Amino acid sequence: MKDSFTVDVTETEHNKVWKQCLEFIKGNVPPLTYNTWFLPIKPVEYTDNSLKIQVPNNFFVEWIDEHYNTLINRTINQVLGPEGELVYVIVEESEPEINEDEPTLFNQPKEELKAAVTEDKQDFENYLNPRYKFENFIKGEGNQLARAASYAISENPGETSFNPFFIYGGVGLGKTHLIQAIGNRIIEKFPSKKVIYLSSEHFTVEFVDAIQNNTVNEFSNFYKNMDVLIIDDIQFLIGKEKTQDLFFHIFNTLHQSGKQIILSSDKPPKDLKGLNERLISRFQWGLAADIQPPDFETRIAILKNKANSYGIEISNEILEFIALNITSNIRELEGCLIKLLASSSLSEKEIDLNLAKKTVNEISTTRQVNISIEYITQIVCNHFRVDENKVREKNRKKEVVLARQVAMYLSKKLTKSSLKTIGLHFGGRDHSTVIHAYNTVDEMLGQDLHIKDIIDGLKNKIELGAA
Ligand code: ADP
Ligand code: MG
Image 1 (cartoon, helix red, strand yellow):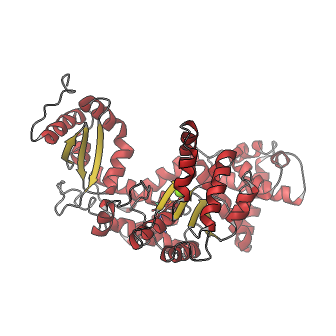
Image 2 (cartoon, rainbow, N blue to C red; image 1 turned 30 degrees about the vertical axis):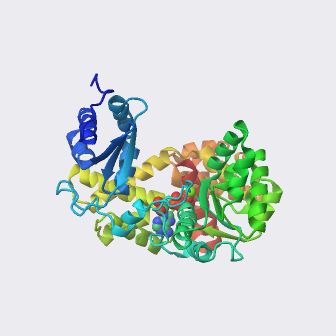
Image 3 (cartoon, rainbow, N blue to C red; image 1 turned 135 degrees about the vertical axis):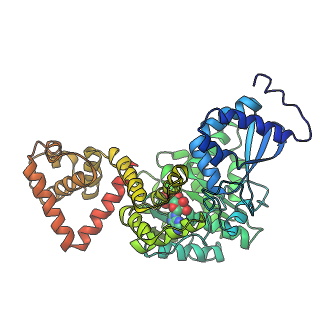
């Protein structure tokens, strides 16, 4: 590989370059991995130090990116030099060139693939991911309002009373998917409309760049010129006063001229403590819709849909098992499925209930490892607006007792700590106090739906926060 920087340019240059890459990769991964993930790739073009490779679908790209990113970077560096670049092109193949062992893993429905290769006709990067569509967003009770409003907006951007439109909810529940689905549908339906999607962090970074380059006016005008401005995870503007100021002006200009503004956040506007009040009040002008964790039926539907999009059929028994055990986060639900598909294809074993149990178990263990009793206490006390120290003292106030019992209950549920350890964390109480707290909360759960909602919500928050 020593002469690798001087790649000979002939008519099959891309083949040649890719062959060198494969040689390098082959030496660095087990044969099964090599056959599964790298052999099916086809080189298509090589220009200006950039190698285009063709892959069968999005899942493939995501998988490689997640698992072999370092290897890919090393390979490119080795073969093309530090300036080298690898570009994925997703192209549907009638007959994927893969072993028969995993024939269906790489077959996605045509629609999704077409969407993935649809070209962006606008002359600026809109950062929309074509994967996020209404068509593959499963309706459920938890997302009914948010979805319906999103759809209505995509029909008439800027012309409904949902302006701004504000979606809020926990991690992995579909906020990004929905707000991008709106953007994707708008550019499809109204190709002349200028739509842009950014996370608030991305927006901040660009703003800082603009300050450094003395281009704040251009920056601001660029966004004021949009027909639809979509900003994800707006909570990350907290503490960034200057960005908030600029955003405030952009917001006003857009809103006054009837342009659509779409925002997402992990909390409702009024709870965005630390965000400028004038922004919070504007966020409440239109519609704020929440997304709740999916119910059992929705979880099943999402799993079925996903499995289907990977071209795999999984028995109801297994789907139900997953849906019963992974309850609060759709990203995790998808992750479980992908993990299952991968371990089945890599170990060449059928997907059966045992494999599903093992996979779900692995996911719950990773989750539990990260959750500490301190963290649980913090989230619970925050919710009940109780000083954390009070739950560790001998305070008998009603709300403190409730917070303490709930925190003990969740510590037992979500960590592997013993009753004794839990008791120690709450001011050295003994294990029978913890049992009593656990039983009290357990009883309340059976009798009081409101409490059940609260505790489910807390559990969700803790698991997601620790993930
Ligand atoms: P959030 O932005 O709320 O953290 P995402 O929008 O990133 O969550 O969703 C996490 C994953 O779950 C994404 O892959 C998304 O496509 C998928 N997802 C979420 N909600 C749904 C749904 N209702 N139907 C299908 N897929 C969903
Ligand atoms: Mg998101």
